[in-house]
Image (cartoon, rainbow, N blue to C red; front, side, top):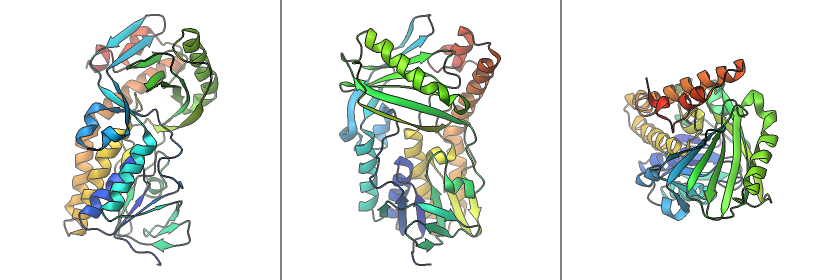
Length: 354
């Protein structure tokens, strides 16, 4: 072994940076790694967070680019359903992630960019792309929906939504998130999210339907341009996978090395909306705190982490996963109705009914 740490954090997105921050500030020796050379880049996110996230992240305002006041939901030709009290914020995800990683560094974590986890042995030995290896006492897997840590521990996100997004200039100010539900987007939806003069225009579908995405996004962009809401030019493109199968068991072990999963690696993105930043922040913080408490001799801290994550996210994720499965089955059977769409989306009271 040629590297040392009590806690190894894989991934320096919101979950990993918060885990590194929480564990380091409690006195643990933390090594946090990320395969990207720059934190938060490239951005693979629609950049919407709930307004309440400022209670967890005091510096959120520095990364906020505009407020969101409402949600507008468009269901085929049924018109627009306005959800007036839907407070959120559009953030600059790159600066948000960078600020969280900087806070982890200032708390004492050793944060290394451009270093990937290349292998994780059955005894918990972690092998890194720079040739080093270590066997920490705790590994926090915060390395995304296709987590290498999760796979090594037998926790795999098997149900993924694939998303693609373009960014264009916004033709006029807008302060709502626009959601477009259609039988053309099985396992997902399309969107317009305004961001301070820009518009994120995208769509997500079940992984098996990913070939539809370029045409779906192009068609929505063209429609919005014809309506005079956005400009026709594309400024940038992005995309990625979202775990939409529901929560995985976030606690495991490799030999004597304890494993905690957080954020997308633990399947904490909402299966219906795809939202995952707030859950990543919360679960990452809890994972770092649990790791530090465990290192202090309180072995129950890890099972406590699992119980707290299940209590915080379990019911909402279970409902969302069930709603998504039912609607996806209707898509596959060619039986998608307005009633089925309404039961499958959070803006409608049918979603929340028993």
